[in-house]
Image 1 (cartoon, helix red, strand yellow):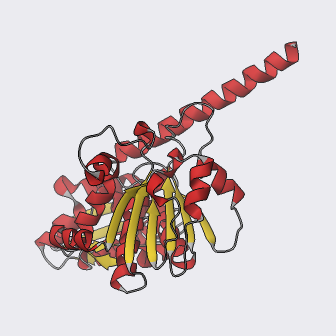
Image 2 (cartoon, helix red, strand yellow):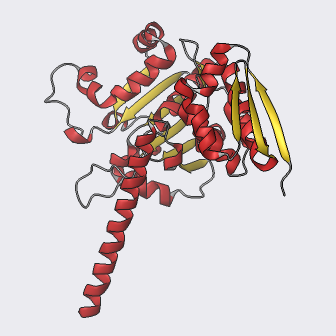
Image 3 (cartoon, rainbow, N blue to C red):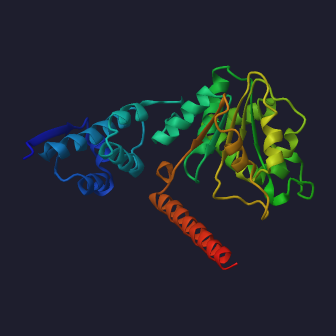
Length: 336
């Protein structure tokens, strides 16, 4: 029989208690749903009562959330559910270091940190390699974290400029029919990169860096024939590159530069029969020294929890379609 245990978590003030327990105690309810013990809220503290095997991990989650809050992070349901998942999965020791790794502070004073183990692996891989592939579903932070690492490298004077590019698949890389100058033509395709930079740097610094050419944003077609040195280069939406475009881009890498290639192989918009350059490169370059490949999962999605369920549902649907297709093909060959 398990020994009964009681633990207390003491809050600094009412604001901290509200932030850790959630609006209308929604975070506290998530704890109750996952740990079979009593949670008794008493003003500036919460008491956890029950068997030690439940009380200790529950207290661990709350203590780490409290640490995260005191480091300046706004607690959301993601931190609560992900923290619970790590502790219940026997990875509680990773929780403290995961939440404590600040990459940089944005212009608005927000601390940017990895929010999942997949994100931390992604960041570590970028630090260790000249070229990193970040592959995963929407909402896993692939693009945003790549931009964060680029800005950090620029601030630390590891590079002299940031180059951001993306294939303009819908226009077939032929942008001439769109009105305006080059910047106007590529804006619709590169807006997610603009938004990330403005969020991290602030509008004034962003505009200044753009004017000085410290930040360069261009469609993938404009990378041909260049050697990119002392730069941090990001290729976004790489699932929509062809095999030739991908090879062209990767061979632009010059001395003192780093590349990050991001994409979601579940959202390929290329014409039927055209091989995704990202899919091919992730197989061809597997195990090549200096190149890291990180595959992120639905559990790394940092958006509304319904988005995670959508990603998982579509993944299951695609898997069922592939299985049915393979079965039909096997039956067809058996009859032939």
